[in-house]
Image (cartoon, rainbow, N blue to C red; front, side, top):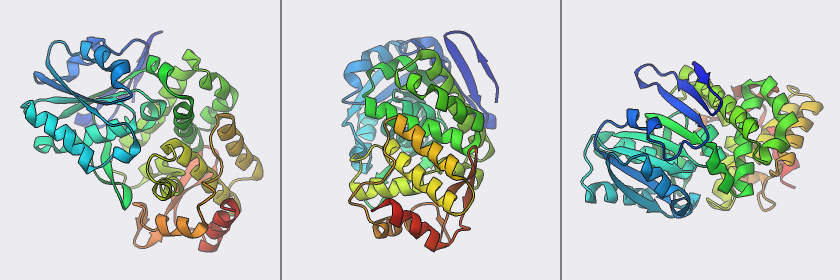
Length: 367
């Protein structure tokens, strides 16, 4: 994966052979056609966004696509709408406006919009192009990179979906200025994850710069987003369809998805659930003797400094966790596999732990 950068803009490349694509990171990219024109093949563009983002950025985003037939669809905002019913609104708009197989869908919003637009693109007329314009920190560093798309089912999160890579990702950090603070914190959970799973020097840098990031320091943000995307792109290039190593990107997510499912989608932000789940994974790693108390404390401390929860919801019992984790996608052949830490900067995907140790972690953190 290569990168070149100038003061205002960095370009990273996600290396997937003939499906490789660039990630542009910088200021004032929204509305500038030069980042997107090279990636639109036909004459039609459908921008998909939600009710929160539309008044803020839709007109600006449309400016970049003036050379095309641009249609828009504005969806309700929230994880609870990430389902097949809402997905149909995108298909309705595409069909009513007679979009053909050379259309390009543009996801303008956070992770929910990115996942749904990507899945609509993967499935409309058996697959059309799409571009990611993520507007939340969480989507900029995580869901917009790597081609995972999908919707939730009432029985489980992201159970219906497809792998479908975007043509490009345009990350305009100016869009973070309108992001509510809890959403910014939620994005930080995924940024911290990259340090924990594969990049100890980045984790140390985050320990030094957490407050600056929460204050939207521009240089810090560009560095954190670039390092996060770089780490994710590296893993995705090795394992596009999550046959093996890519699963380390799910640190904290098996516990986190259980929280989201139990509480009802949208009650806890994805990043909040991942933060609490990361503490649970770190606690179990500590009980297994893999990481020391100091490392466990460091995980607690940085999440707390970013305003993130370090315990699951008070109404969740260890039994609830066990039931919900049993239907997680990461259960293979009846054995629960978790992403755990061998050290800060080194994650493993393993089923090599005693159920009693997992139950001890759950009992300790749910009371």
